[in-house]
Image (cartoon, rainbow, N blue to C red; front, side):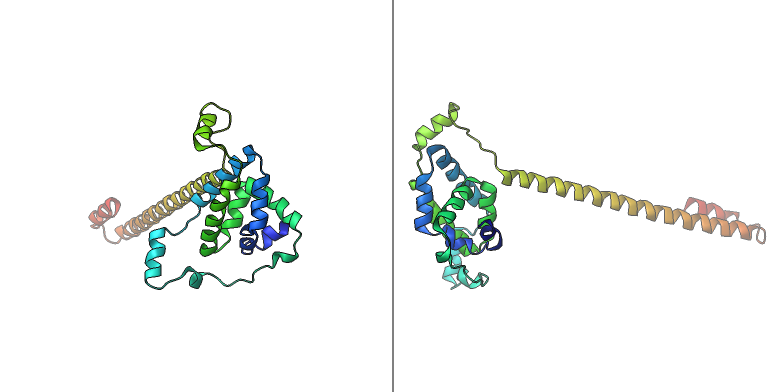
Length: 215
């Protein structure tokens, strides 16, 4: 079943917008997991690059639809899949922010927007304390206020990799500069040698040799 999530990233849209399965999974979470699921959903969509409402309105005003920009795909018929298996893996998926991010990021922009609205509308089905109580629970250490997100860790790793690449580029540039400098020195030495060789034939070329050395 995990192959379903791996090989059919685009078709995850059908599974994650299935009201019966998702609402059942949300209603089964206990409070601690419900808090984490809500955080994961909000965090994932904050990390995805999605068009603003203003942009969507401007596109609509000019008759441009996201559906026209979406890649064509063959939707997976989920009716033949075992319901209990789907719910079991959805239960795990929403608790794992990295897997959730990967599953949604593989969808088209239109699908991402629809999944976002669908999931946010179902968030009230989660067993959550009131916002005021949740804030107090975080402030007084009843629950962790800042959960760790692997997506952030991946971003930090990307920054580190970028810094390493830039360091390598700087070293290559320095190497090329040094190579050019050595090449210029070699040309200068060759010119002086040539003038020195001619000095025997033309003793008056001492000024040319000095100029070559100072060039």
